[in-house]
Length: 126
Image (cartoon, rainbow, N blue to C red; front, side, top):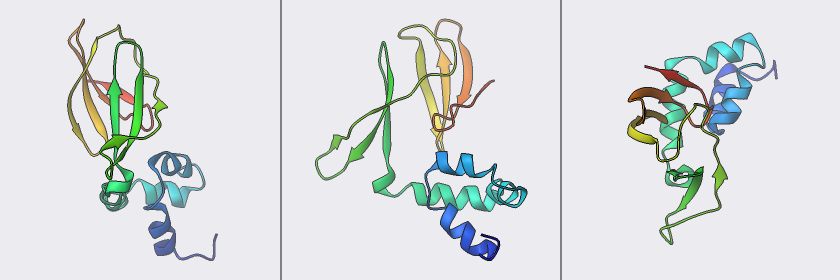
């Protein structure tokens, strides 16, 4: 990989899923620095917005799941279960807003606000 220009690595990594990007940060210091730049995040986010990459997050009483959206039939594809990484009760989670894959979540029983990345499962209490 040392023979590939950094521009080529950039182009390849902006096209892979976010989970792969997260794992790729530990490859080497150069990749960590590259994947942490605002430019990389902006380009990766814009490429993730194409319709073939769209997903919907559904939260019900017992589960949280992510479904790909099938635009031709206006239906959902097979689901992937997502474990909520924070303590919550049934019917307790409200999504207040979203931006670039991050969700602002309210835990209704405590009125606690969280910033949550469902792709990496990282969250931060606000």
